Length: 237
Image (cartoon, rainbow, N blue to C red; front, side):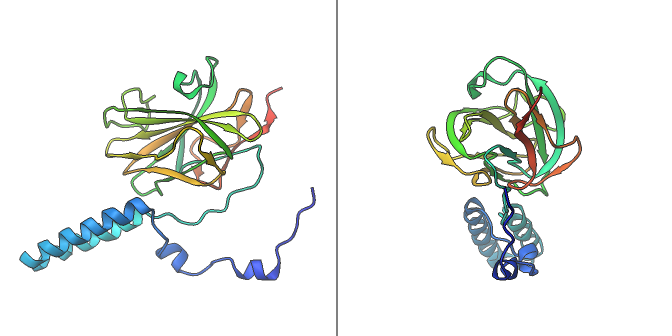
């Protein structure tokens, strides 16, 4: 396949301004929370002028937390893209949860750990259809180094356009208090498309199709919607 070079107009359209880094757009869930916070501190400010020494840093951090920066997803129906920002904290073989509809054989699971400073918007790892969904309530305990059977989590199964099945799990962490996932079975998603988020520190697990090897390393920083986790064309022989 021949690569088509971008036009001069496309090159000029690439945003290299400071706004891209300091004033990114935010997720709609963040807009609601920021409005409530602003109203709360405004009312409290009528009683105590010093409230803004606390309120302003909290508002700035909340804006930063709910940021939803533009991402540019590599093209190819055979690619599996990182659904979350964070550090690749674990890569292991294990049997996936039955609710994902991936069978009973061991598959490679890639875990991405999101700190409170990571972008927490989650993006679809492949283009395809949502086939399985299951929400499991649970506790809020550390997700950094365990299999998270006790944590609140949202299980999502998809069938990619090339027919491969993939599963991924949103897991609430120690200080997370809500998993946001409005998906329904039958929904169609494009790779890199925003589908939900987790508030304040969490993890996202991805189960690769059978025979597919990861292209990321333990400790690597993943970027949602951009980092290639695996190539489904490159299966184990």
